[in-house]
Image (tube, rainbow, N blue to C red; front, side, top):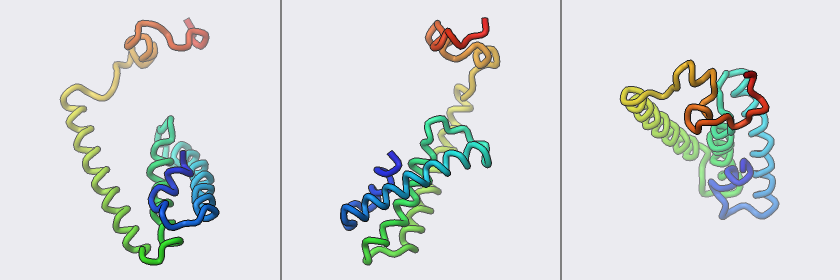
Length: 131
């Protein structure tokens, strides 16, 4: 997935080898990003979406000028900043609205029992329950 995201920003100019290398670097970056977000920044991202789409997406944007001389790094950085500001601002506003209207957390009891029980009526992995 990271390799695909890395090359998606500018797939029209690199050769097959260059595209493969850009994707491979994205694959390496995602491993370190997932680890850093979890251990250093304490961000819970169980599916790695921030690492794949955010971090490797940024790498993909910055890799475009490597194979397309009509694109500048500064233009790519400006685009990345614009995307970040828009996504962060919009997401923050929506999360605050959802939090005010219906909440974003389950109760402590539901969290302790497991949301699978409260949402679906059964344990998703009964072999791991302590009851």
